[in-house]
Image (tube, rainbow over all chains, first blue to last red; front, top):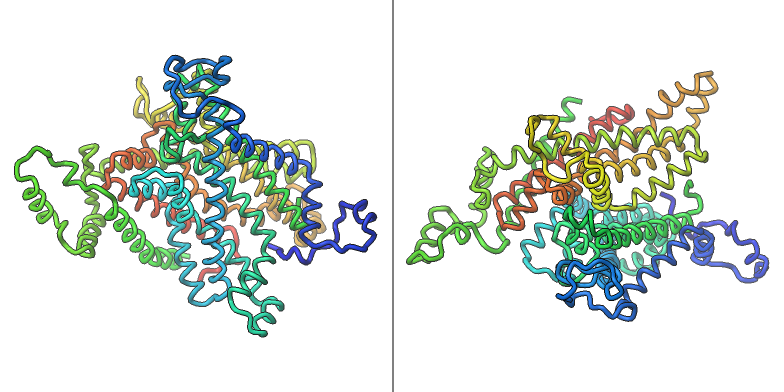
Length: 308
Length: 319
């Protein structure tokens, strides 16, 4: 993998912007990457759709007055109506409200899960790649060991052992089980940079290890790191929904797209109440599709040499 | 090659040891125990009885000794008794493992059968209309989670067309329990995993082929006057297969995860379904066995991938 956004050539895609500045302002690599990203139509469209999905989850109470947990017992299993735009489930809770509020759980797992994964992986992968030798050996053994357990299986078993169903705990368990892949990836990036001249000179002038890792090395792996984190986020959202589909994710009454699907996967609902399962299924797919498009766009933006 | 395989198999022993220790500790930390679950709570002097049962079953021994005892039994196939199914665990695992292996094999065959040829055709005609269409479709299919594909497949093939069963691993009727019946029930869940995985393979095949096509030895092959087909099959594809084999190694792990979800969704009586049922019922002897077996499958999968690696890439010499 070629890394180092610092080594990119001037952007070929923004001649007008280049003319306007007429070489007065030299652009930072990040700025150039951003410009390339903004010229990728699919990625920008995906970003807009994703923002809309996020906003609709954040501002759910302003979009619908219906509560995602209140049971309207006079209208159970109702088809779409003026009162309930997407009908209600067998408890009489409003599907439209659940679809909107449900995004909060999935997106939170995506964002916070990725953030905690990044912290664990940066520390472990960074130390392994930077120090090498026995630190690397220990971390990589641990990675190999964890890789033997299917992540999903570990999460299910751990959730059963911990015997509670809080969203925060779920995020923690996901972070504690899903780190090996990202750690290995980050370790590889650090290993490549270890002998770079600027790292050696930083070492020579006596910079501390943390300073070298976070001040000098991390900015230079930012490109591939951001791309990987984006794709990880998509995977985690898929993972939460997968867990919820078989009843191990976010627990009702707290809504999540996955547990709406869990409640709607019997043959009767699938056949006669498409409004119950198509919206959450569509929202999960659309969110993941958008994040993947954004990830692809970011990869092209950070690494213009990447074969398209 | 033979010695390499033997060495790798021996090298798996420390990892197997670590896997069993970890699983054992996890189950030890789990709340509840079999004695509480199996005993009638209205018995008189219940504490005394419990203590007696703990003593004779070795639950008062130090942890390491309990582990050693468990391992001794596990190695000889005495995997304990499921208090939920009222059957020895090993009798539960047998048919479940067979069902899951069938599911995995069907899914892998479908994946390779369609994924690689589509990728090859795309690489043969890059930037054509077909290439763009296939790339877009595979990107979308790669993004849609397999359980949502599964719901769509159930909706179309099981509910509307009614040509495939929506759930179960075996059916009723004259064919019940035969291989054909098993295959028929495995097809829909297998297709759900295969479609998403096919998308990965078409992307990788296309990318790997296009990379090898640019290599000098491909130009040399053309310069020697070889036919287009021969260059593609003998020179380009042979080399493009190397990254695909790595992906094949990953499949085993991801199929294990996929099997858990899809078997839950299709109520297909395999290892994943058995695990979910057992987790829901706190049936720890079964969970322990399935967890260890899943990990062993992944370990073996990696070994198979490494061996295949040596087969497709003669530059790799394992000595």
